[in-house]
Length: 213
Image 1 (cartoon, rainbow, N blue to C red):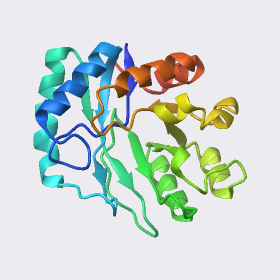
Image 2 (cartoon, rainbow, N blue to C red):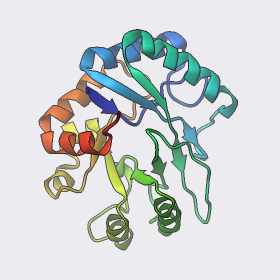
Image 3 (tube, rainbow, N blue to C red):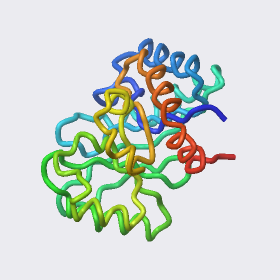
């Protein structure tokens, strides 16, 4: 199995990701060239700062899935679900039972604990997206400690990995997943592959986590 990209915004006319079908195809080709076999596209849901045209999601996904088959890439539909205070938003699980979530960057999300607990009790795996963006994220955070105890997985974007921003978390094995969070950059797949090669322990963890048929 090749690499897995589990966080991307490659559906045109949906959110703040790729703008055209041509751009989506360029990025998809770049993933193929970089050695990826699975690309999960995760359109934003409920993010208050992003307009998401949810009516376009299924149509654009079916189109991109077909284009992926031509290239030998499995394109999977998921979502990046924003979890706000006291909310229990819907989500689109991917690869069976993974749910990617994001939260406010500045406020410690006590409300995430109940949402994650409910999902985990129902048999899902919860992934917290781009942990480097959260001002509140630290080893001393009681929320972070509780999320670890619950089995929530932490994802970092590849550019934060390559820049050394999250070295302390990598050294403490707190980062389970490295992804691109690609919004239309056809140079990013190569950087993501490089970050995975640089951290084989994370790559091995991801291979076990995303083991597919």
